Length: 441
Ligand code: ATP
Ligand code: MG
Image (cartoon, rainbow, N blue to C red; front, side, top):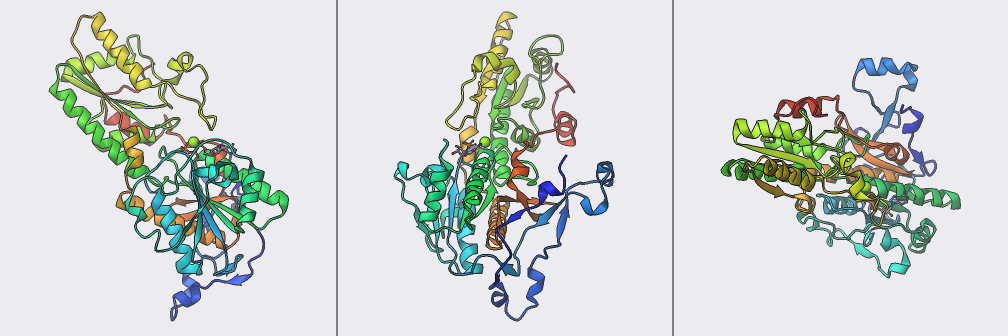
């Protein structure tokens, strides 16, 4: 259970400087722009949840409000900040970089930001990557492009070496834009900073195309990604409808969380079955996928199956053989290929025709530029991160809850993953808009 103590954001110390934002909004009652330290956002959605926790009112779990503070820990103008992007690509990375650079310049008069290249590798001199210097001019157009202008990478680096690099470059604030692994890395860097008694803030902007990080509302780029995936589902339906007994299979991202599969299926409204990691299913037997699919194809003449990349792993555990990538993440066996081959064999066995099509929008959805809604979200998350860092907050990430931007401690977001609940209303919506039975086990 998450407690109020788990949601307390760390600071480097008492604030020491007045925010220059006062002059920026000259002539107005500037106080309304500042966030009060007492401003907190409720974690629970319902009265029942709050009551169920059985804790006194003043100990109810709440998040710290994000936003500009009247008093800063770091001095405006002379603070030195750096940014790094790690892990897989996601729409909006360049928007975040641009907004961090712009927010530091616009609000705090910090004219340049260092960019460490290729993820944490750029913080290790052994990789020979010199950082780039971002200015407001150099980032002017980068948000129009997908990917990350800094590059990214996987693979572990020594936190001691990375902190040495921060010290050598005289960095006061490190912004880390990355997924669960990157945030674990950011926490380890923070621990090393703390161990040495340094005054360096580490603030994360969580990046996960799978939307699998808890407490942050929705991750940036997610909306762009599922909209793109939905286009493939629509194309898959057109193909399937045009073929004799057409069965199209669309593989989506989603290693451990089926959010992209669910949202893209809901967006396209044409999927017959959605297979996600959180909901196990059987292929065989009277209630297995093959039997339901045969009925569906017989009824409608075609079917579309959306498969998250992490689905059916329990059926495929043996084939994976425990292989891992450079960051230690398990290499998954492609469940969409597996499902496709099983369908092919099933129809062949019955001597019936089936026309199979395989769609993998995977890397395409990661590399597109952010859509307008995500562009807004990225900019505002980045601004929230800059405000938090300038006020001396550290070991934290930014997110959005109940339409409010919030600061959340890194350990709270790395302790567990955010998943589609098989008992929740999202999965129910998916079941309602597919031909899928409540259970296929
Ligand atoms: P995504 O999974 O969304 O692509 P990610 O941030 O989870 O993004 P990873 O490749 O798992 O991607 O991790 C990114 C970086 O964080 C890598 O350089 C990796 O070595 C580092 N990292 C991952 N886990 C840890 C950890 N527990 N401690 C320190 N560093 C870590
Ligand atoms: Mg990850």
